[in-house]
Image 1 (cartoon, rainbow, N blue to C red):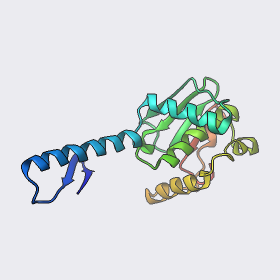
Image 2 (image 1 turned 180 degrees about the horizontal axis):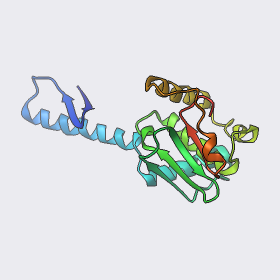
Image 3 (image 1 turned 90 degrees about the horizontal axis):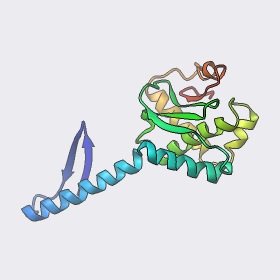
Image 4 (image 1 turned 45 degrees about the horizontal axis):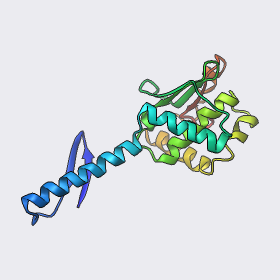
Length: 173
């Protein structure tokens, strides 16, 4: 038995020998499992804020406290961005559904910008406590490469001079 999503539809595969009652029971069970997985992989803004607080506590000594953190749909060349001046963090909706360690890295990356706005040694030292930094960066680089995005174009510095820091699709960020 298995269940998956396909173009907005839910597909549940069950044995043909099931009775109607068994079919209804297993479809309900499999749909519930899918929905639970969806919630875990696609957290709400409130869940994102709780996740950020937990990551800040575990990896940054609780020092990074964003005024807000939310999903946005208008970031096509960045995975996330942060405006240290007002403490706001935005995470691209494209990260939804990626493995949790990747989401955690993107959130932690933006949290670190609240403490160190640029990408200098101080910034990178803040991320040393996260054990999956390199793995997550590799995943994001792979997604960018698969999408045919230009990894050599370092567009992250443009926002930083305006008081904004970002994790973009480039390999250099």
